[in-house]
Length: 118
Image (tube, rainbow, N blue to C red; front, side, top):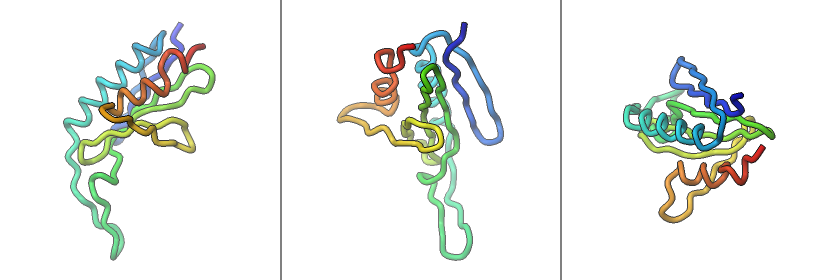
C-alpha cells in the first residue's frame, strides 16, 4: 500500500509517483530535484513597465511530498538552479537550513521518519 505521493511539476508537465515509506519518497524528491536544478537556466523576464523578475525569483519546478497525517512538504527549484525546501500546501513555510545543511537535508529533518510516522 503506497502512503506517500511525490508530485513533480516542471513547466506544463505533472508526474506522480507513489512510495510505501518516507525514506524512499525523500530519496526520489532529492534525485529529481538535483536533476531539475542542473537543467534549469531561466533568463530574467520583464513584466509590465518597471518590474523585472530575476531567475532566482522564478520557480521552474516544484516537487511536492504528500503523506499521512496531512504531511505536505517539498522542494522549489529556482530559475538559477538554487533549491529551497518548504512545508505546507496553501501556506508554504520555508524550511531554514542549518549551517552545512543542504535543502534536501533540511527537508529530511523537517519531515523525516520521526516527524512523518503514520
